[in-house]
Length: 123
Image (cartoon, rainbow, N blue to C red):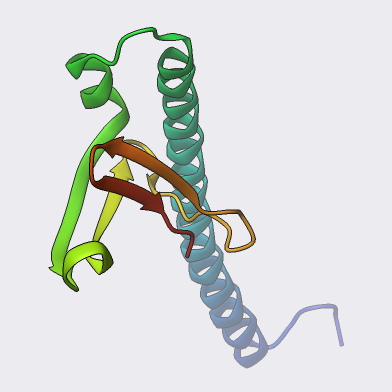
């Protein structure tokens, strides 16, 4: 043997190399996409925190601030009658979507006007 590989062995190694190269390109592409998504989430989080800070410092609730903080609100059908009436409202915040409140948190109840009480239920 003079240190050369056979043509058959060379073709086999060449094919394996090409398959590995294609597989690595695919992995690199997927990882770059994931990195881009994480970077976008980080930017969205920073924008949300900024909006919340403005919200915490405000003395008067303004429409522009609400537009900056809230993406949309889903309002569901009213259930029950009289004092047992309930209505589910889900607030979707900009940049972060719906925020699930932990179930171990206490429910918050407020009397908003005469005869109307609002209770914020946890999931």
